[in-house]
Image: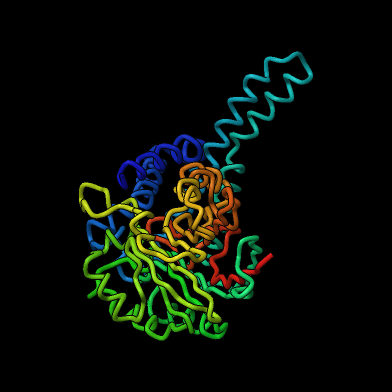
Length: 385
């Protein structure tokens, strides 16, 4: 998959960008080779350093290669738009003059070297900004949701949502400490971690995850597993999460009593469990709620794509998900939404169910870009109508 991704990016950059440069073919070949290296960054780092997407590489190398990978990815997109625009203007050039002449000149202008230079400058600047937005400590954001069926006794309940931390060499201990400090300063009633907490084995991440032990809330800290927990050694992480003080909801639920009112926290596994590499229990809402008393249910499921299915169970009031990282880039949001049943970030009404898709704290090393889509620590306040 990583190699195929690299080949696709390289082909796009060659035809949409490099061929328009006023250089000799040996120079263009060298630029194509450089683009191929950075486009295949994940495959190369994974082969050399191991880990989930090469995440065990030195931090400085991760940052440097991420910057150039981002620039190549943006040049691929710019080049694609350029080729489409040139194709359209070539068709429009057959219109009667003066319109036909105008589009012919416009097509020629798109192929000028100075256009390529402009695209390169924009790609480098945008890649730098997107890498900075991806790597920085998340902002604190407060969100309020009103629910008709929410009990009056639970009005004002606050939940800190910490999805997709992807703790790794990229997002290491100092970053985790700041996230914990910002979260604890808000004094939430509940803290929820809806999957993809870590990238790497328990041994590799022991130092980086240690600050998570300071997370505490009056009614508990609850976690579920995301797809990256499976890639990182799920069976070792489940007891590790318990040692950090999390109650891990693995197709199970917990009954808590905020302000003396019963509330059910439920969690299901991730669809990755069904992969032939793992053959573990997939998400099972019926099992998660087995034996649960009558009370509002806050469900955590890492992916939002099954929200419509979960909404068929009238007991589920709120679903908290992550996985999408908010879409990451403006042009990518539509694609991310499409593969997640239309859900990408924020609140959605799914029948009587309220779905919240968290934009994430961190990112996977394979595509560490955020442009106009900041990471956040979200404090959700739930209000009764």
